Image 1 (tube, rainbow over the protein chains, first blue to last red):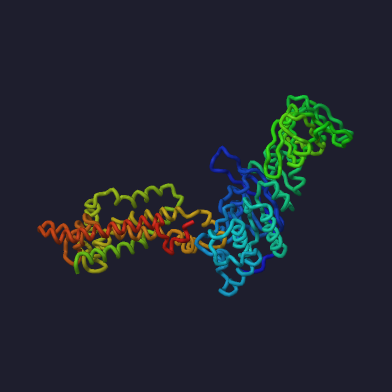
Image 2 (image 1 turned 180 degrees about the vertical axis):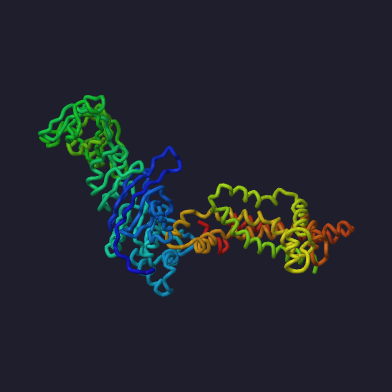
Length: 369
Length: 226
């Protein structure tokens, strides 16, 4: 049982019809080599259902799940290894720590095949690795949220799994705490090298963790690759919103300037015209343009001598302070949302009704189909 | 043996048997996905709505020398089942069944399913998950089942009368004893026994409700108290 685990690659293709006929069908094929692979997509896209299928908690209608040549599920040959023999660790969003057991008992729960002393040592080792050794005699209700997350990770990894599934395990933690837990996870996995599937709908977590990203929407893989490639060229609207593109604007293509690699579009029904990167389109086509609020510059006078091609004049509709950030809504014929620092609000004397100029780099404007 | 200690012995036997038999039934009712589950649920709940005399009547028929249970019992032990302590235990087990199964089922169902999934993913089979997760987290339900089936058996009258008759030291329980004494106008003695049963019933119910409201948190419920 306690054989040393070599690294495997997860190969899965899963088809699962949801009970409720109106909802989408989960139909996904993916490959996850050792290391962290992020499953990214909006809530309800099918990410958790996919993990449930991989873990064996839910039986797919069809498909095959294997860790290299070791088959866990195959609808054709009728293989269906039960969850307790899949050697897959799964950390739920709710963590599901056993409330009546201590931290050490929780972590040692999966180690019953190991004799007493070794078992204690193994638990000790993993408690140390995740910096929770001092909590070993506490119960889950007595420790903090971040500590609980560490316990859940440690518990699932103590069994030396061949695959780790994480379903938004770090939601609700502040960035610093998140980063330190992720560092510990990375350090642990540097030696073990198992595939880790990490589900999130948070753009920040993708940036912090990213090695590979698989974007899922409506039960299907919509794109995969390096985080920059997947997230910065969103090809789907819902994904764009999930990825933090606060501005999603309807536009009509005016003309293509192929030598410059750009095309001009008119935004909505307004007179606003901007340049966006060239795409397969022709004049008159309807497209959508996604722009991050953080990519928009604000100026209190008409700017000169800029490389940015798009300068739009407008009027501030509202300013909302959110923590260390200010959200400005600006009317330029269409309404833009821009993020500025409180310092900039002060320096530019921004206020409602004030006339401002928005500056957009061409390559900050992403086309969505 | 006086009627009070006989009643306690009967209630103790019945509560113990019910706990052992009730657990698998409650487990199945809580976790099975079978669509016909309501059938078993209805059967389990039958004693709640049937008059004890109806239940007792059929129990008597089954246990009589020509009934299936009676025949089996005679074949095994050489004597009949009706009007014996064993017969009384058997009928009482049926009569108090819902009082054991329902609290167990409710507390099993209340265990977070994610904990059961987590246990399976950590390599535990169903039996280990039951012993290490479901049972400890259902302790208030187990205590409730035990106490309620004990108390309900202590207070039963109709079934005992039908199946057990009124044999001193064998089947004369305290509730029948009270009836007897009233019939023979021994009001003083009847009152003494009746008051005792009243006090016991009240104490038992106070205990059950307190456990479920976590008035005091005894050691074994501390885990589930968030």
